[in-house]
Amino acid sequence: MSAGTTYAGAAPAGADPVGAYSDPAILVQSSNAALWDVATKTVLVDDTTGLVKRIHWVDQAVALSLGVQIGAIASQPTLGHTLRQIKRSSGQKLEAEVRDAVRLALKTLLDNGDIVVTDIVTTVPVRSQIVVAVSYINLRIPNVKLPDNLVVAF
Image 1: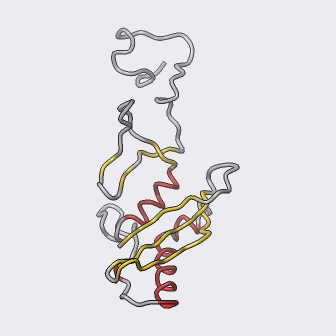
Image 2: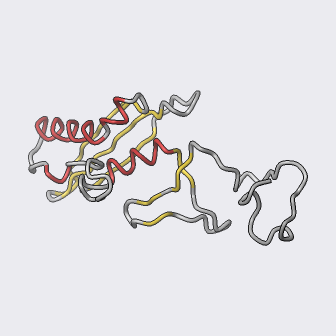
Image 3: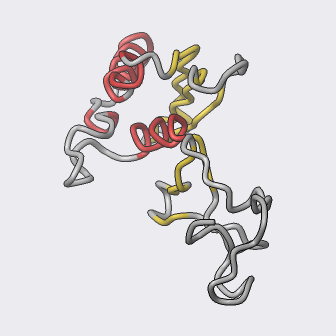
């Protein structure tokens, strides 16, 4: 078995357990990413296991694309949204500008066939805030056709 197959200290040094280690919490799944919380700017850890929380990489890409302003991550200057650049307007003009900004933020995922956006709802609960709810389907998860929802307030 390779290094990293068991927890450190779970077996004597140099031990090679027979058969596959079956703890699903540590099996590597290439479709998962560490869950990065855009609000706190930290990787989230499960309080019970101490392991990093996991999320499908497409869902994480959607969260990052809509959760950070474009240019905020120096190593990925084109990642993010332009929602904060929208002038405060109302009605159909605001909805069209938000729809365009969301589609621009998700352009790579849309072009690659990773997601399909099913709905974009814009509300203005208070005068200085706009809330955008984006519903999308992650097309990289087999047999899942229910939309995921992400709400962004700015």
